[in-house]
Length: 127
Image 1 (cartoon, rainbow, N blue to C red):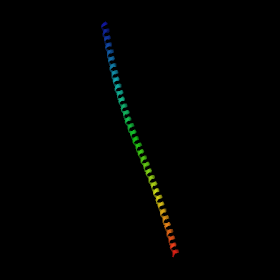
Image 2: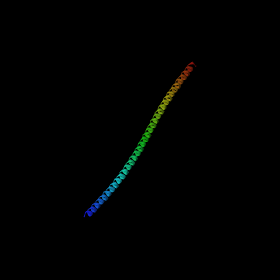
Image 3: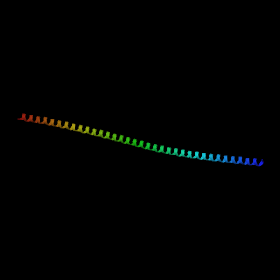
Image 4: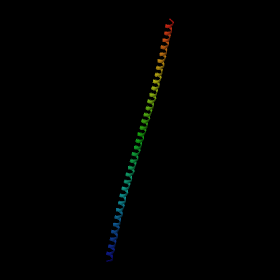
């Protein structure tokens, strides 16, 4: 009876030890699986953040280039407007000068005609 009880106790201890070993192995396997999942999630998040950073950088660069293009177009437009205004101003100045020269020439010719008429009248009267 004592031997049977000793065998049963040994068997129960062996079974409890096997169950404990199996539980520990299952727990270790589960911990390793969770660790792999956490590592994969961490890498995926890192890659996502890296892609977002690259995309934000590209967007910022595109916006900077668009602003520079707009600024260049605005400057070119201002320069064209300034050139056109200067050209118009110069054309108006030349037009005023030409008009003044035309009037001066007209007045000179008129004075010469009057002078020639007076001279002719004086000669006619002298005769």
